[in-house]
Image (tube, rainbow, N blue to C red):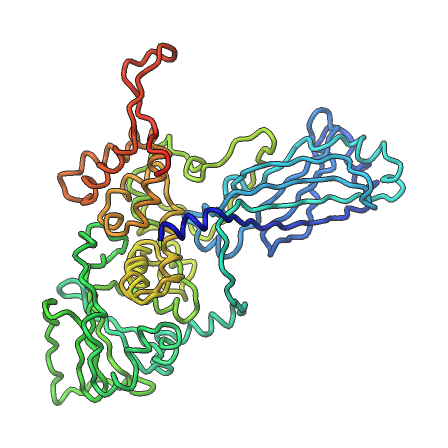
Length: 537
């Protein structure tokens, strides 16, 4: 695995999109914007798959109105808005972009400017130059421009390099079609299997989710095996489909689900004919006894075809429904991690979380943020806001649980989308694709304040690949993390047992740090500072 990763590191690819915008009627634009006042904006078409737009100001309003302005505007996609926490959307990655102003025949270049490593988000949606070029130099002086009454703005955007991704045969599907397919989930008329989720608490209500065997079997080999003809006749699937979760530490304490997931997921499966098959380890806890129905009280008829009952234990209803919705539509939304709400420091700005660059070559033009959820100070509040905005969709789930399930069912993509609950679920059911999506969500939400909570958690202790990314982040930002309020909170709560990975992880962390004696110059601090060590880790 390490050799493969090393080989991938030798190859980096990036994607570039170029817009050539011919701006006409320059005489009207420049003559009507004379003076010191900033002109109205002229916008290009949205390009790059609806992700970008160029903003052109014939008069910047700076230095007596002698300059034009050019900005690159990030247009958030519907997916980015959907994933936004408290309306704070962000685009993944860093971008290099270039603006060039040319004559209509492109033989003359009036000015070129380039910016590197810029992040785009709700806070800094637009980057560019307030004084890109002098008005005289691009319009009044060049005779060709005034005669043709036009020039060309060329914008080129390049994403930050990343390891090459193997080609995937993907066919776009209309959103309306996916929504229609998604609406078939939990509709008994079009379902021949019912997943039964017993109550997690005494006095709770048993919940059911209706689904189609054929659809699930086509999406996951796990379900194909489960619903095979041999199984329909009562054959056992074998105990190897349920793994021992002792290495997951305390998943309940570390869960991001509102009704937290437990370690072991067991199944009780029965057909309408009354055949019951248990798929669980021999030493697993006994099933909850279900009293037989009264002879004179027949159960109400369920619409649709006869249904095979599958009892799913130790998995939250929200997590499992989100997982099934993913299999139906290839769509899943993760709720923010609890660690993102555990500590809020006035000094911890969102710019720190995004690692926004500060560069004189491309200053941000602030614009209002766009998002689909209202502001909230808790995970539960965020979920309520999301549910109100999307009443027809499953409630966002925990990425950790989905990660475990996807791993178990071999759905890699799902594993990257689910954060913690989905990560656990992906891991549980060996779903590599799903697991990859959950992994991305977990690692992309790292910040100075959240990493201490996550790095020492039982979840990170169970998954080395997640812990490695968090460890690298902690080493890069150790000078800030070691004095952060969240780190102090972790240290104060060690006796509670909430951080089972602390001892092992801290031992590894200290192994990569080195003591640096204070120099004779500087601020006069008498204590040494810890610096990063262990190059070549």
